[in-house]
Amino acid sequence: MVQAWYMDESTADPRKPHRAQPDRPVSLEQLRTLGVLYWKLDADKYENDPELEKIRKMRNYSWMDIITICKDTLPNYEEKIKMFFEEHLHLDEEIRYILEGSGYFDVRDKEDKWIRISMEKGDMITLPAGIYHRFTLDEKEQWEVEHLDQGSGSSGQSHQGADCWPARAGPRGEDGGGCCPVFLTLSTGKQQAQVRPSVRNPF
Ligand SMILES: [Fe+2]
Image 1 (spheres, rainbow, N blue to C red):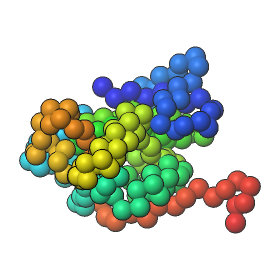
Image 2 (image 1 turned 30 degrees about the vertical axis):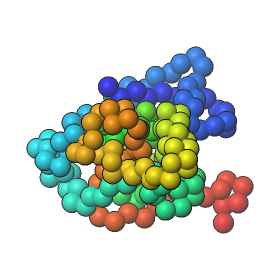
Image 3 (image 1 turned 60 degrees about the vertical axis):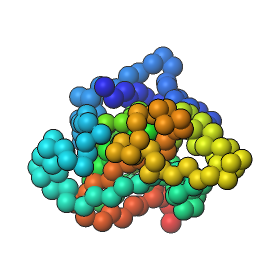
């Protein structure tokens, strides 16, 4: 089951869990009151999953794309990672379904406090239009990214994200390597992100 918690105020490495002390877990019910919806699906059969089809039909998610967050395959990787962590909102829902790997989605509650949602394979969430949010890799993924990067540097081989797709490889670790996070992104149409204006420089 997906885990979520209120974050501490630290600005240190965002890939760390940043749990508030004392711990303040957030339930699915609390997330629902913010308009955040959650499903657990079988990511290994996403290409032909009646459950996923049902959700897509019900919520009119006609558009679909795959993002692989791999240093070797994602153009401007470092820039993109920074951009994902920049607080922003959309005028439409944002839907993310984790096919491989893991990461953190952070959303602001109604008092502007950050809630961190720890997402892994099979987790799908919908963030409502207008909610401020951001995304970061977690420590595990960072380790793998670094590990793979070192591996590719010494061997000259490229670790393609596609090798980690459920349809092409065994579970994590079985293929002797690791996997980059692979997300299925769904929506009712193309989205435009709006970065939160700086409080100090609102114009
Ligand atoms: Fe977004």
